[in-house]
Length: 130
Image 1: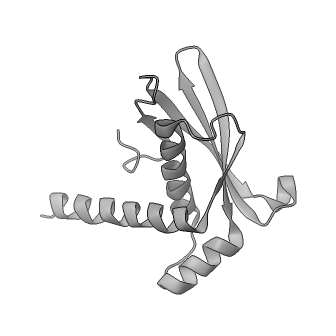
Image 2: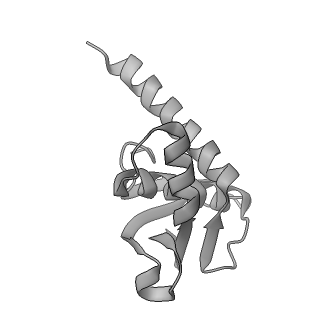
Image 3: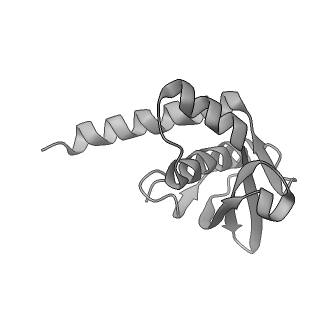
C-alpha cells in the first residue's frame, strides 16, 4: 500500500541506511490542547526492525489557514494527515531531524507537499478512470 492510498498504514524507505519503515497513524489533534501551540499535530509510529519511533508532525495553523485561503480550498483533517505523511516521508528518506520528537512543517513545505498530493490524486484519477 502506498502512502497516499492509505495514510494510516504504509511503508517508507529506504532511508539513507537502507531501512524500510512501517508507519502507523496514531492521532491528529490541535496543538493547543497538549502544547499550548496554534497547530495541528499529527502523530505517527515508525517501526523498522526492533526500533520504533513516535514522531509528531507539526502543521502551524496560521500557515494552513493562509495557504487554504490563497488556494481557495478547505482545511480538513484528512488533508492535514496526508500533508503530515509527506513530511514524515521526507524526514525519513533524508533522515532529517529524526532525532527530534516534533517535526515542524514550513509554509514552503505545506505548498510542496500539497502539490505532490494533488499530482498523485490527478495521476490516480487518470489511471483509474472508467
